[in-house]
Length: 247
Image (cartoon, rainbow, N blue to C red; front, side, top):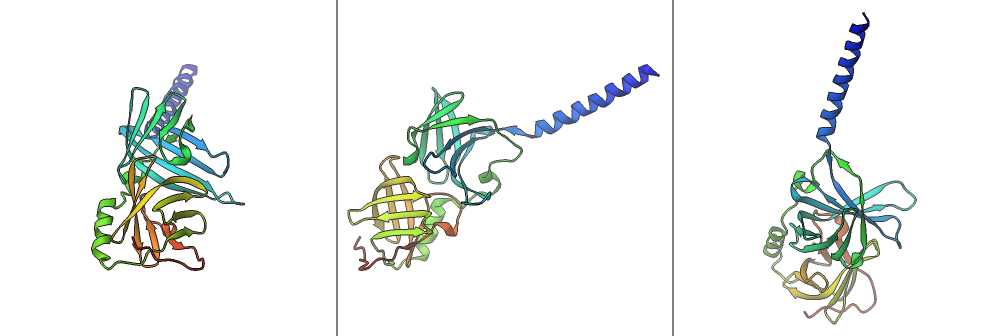
């Protein structure tokens, strides 16, 4: 009788062990590197390195006086680790990022302006899901640009000055063809701009890369990041004596 009880107990233990390993096998470990903004404790930048060389970068925000959070995907694509460098190739804008790679942290060497030379610490993270861009692929930027140009052939008015959305997203265009782009107070990009029809080409002097903005009547549509959102439809800040751009 005792031997039967022992065998039964061993069988139950074996089944539980087997089931646990099956569940764990479905959960993939994802490398997560995170930077918490010192000046804005409610905003983190997270780099997720998935299997098969895929990555996503999110800016995670917590709304004031609330536990509700919002995740904005600012980049996705392929990565590789080579000669102590984490190299990322964005598949939406085509921009390249470079981080100095260590086992427990990475340091931004070529990235959005406000994160340059910042240390992103490694965190343990497990995920059973695929990267979002594989499950919900965004419309390619080249296709968006082509469609917008074909559907907006008549030149729209462009005003010099500041465009914003609830002060969370700000794009400033000045007369000297310089621009600044901020998200929740973070300076992500700055450089020079030129107009090409109803497109604005923004050359980021740090990343050495062109970003695009669509000129749509009295609003600008920022295409810095994938996935359409009303949050990136910017309106002109109302000031006296607006001047039309002759660019």
